[in-house]
Length: 151
Image (tube, rainbow, N blue to C red; front, side, top):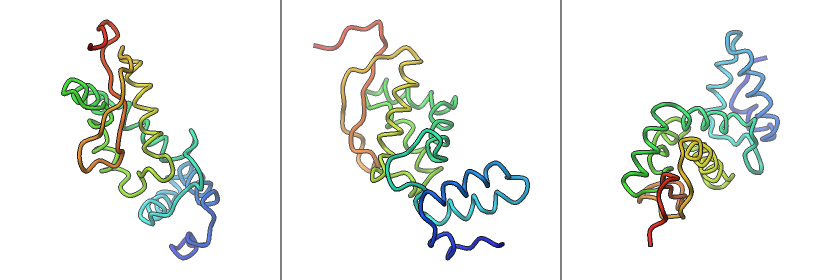
């Protein structure tokens, strides 16, 4: 059976998520076509927050934990910005409209950033506004664990 955009629209978000996961497991047997259709549709794969097995969460982890992602987190931190400000452009470029605050996607990205920053030897110092044009409005700020908080 050929999957179409019309059929995707009639499915529940959970059913689309299941279809996506099944397609991901069968990429070489035509699954990539379904993944591409779902990604281009802009239809949600969840009705609530993002789960750890959600394809968007997995993709954000890949982006944020990548060598480039970690480098951008640290560059943003050194510039006095929230770490998320460094990597969010990569997330937006990859996920497009699927990355948004309505399903707690920005919160999930911030949580992943927090895990990476702690892994890299940083500690949370506060929250700050994200740069103009960002999807997330505020995000955590970090400093190396060996430093004293300012003030």
